[in-house]
Length: 104
Image 1 (cartoon, helix red, strand yellow):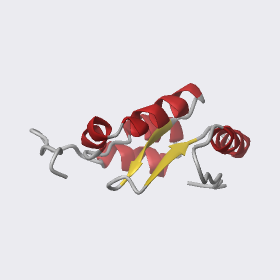
Image 2 (cartoon, helix red, strand yellow):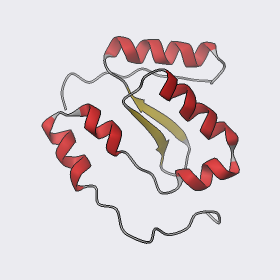
Image 3 (cartoon, helix red, strand yellow):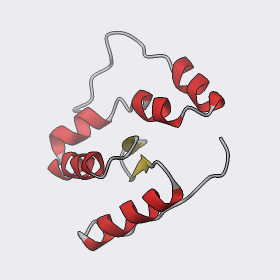
């Protein structure tokens, strides 16, 4: 937390919530944010490496959850989620889960 700096301007979640409610998952992925992630990336290169892995796996969006106890990605489909989880696990990223939702 010491490396985290408060934002100069608040960032609203209104657009993210609207995209979620409308079922526009690609927009949700684009609008994800976590104010702690930049500070965590400065402390741990692992977070940046995982972010690049998920970007290369064509995820719609990804980020740390909270203060970084886990990291998640939004995938294009259940099959894409299973593939992403399998690739990450095969590359030694530890425990991975693929969860699918049939609605938003």
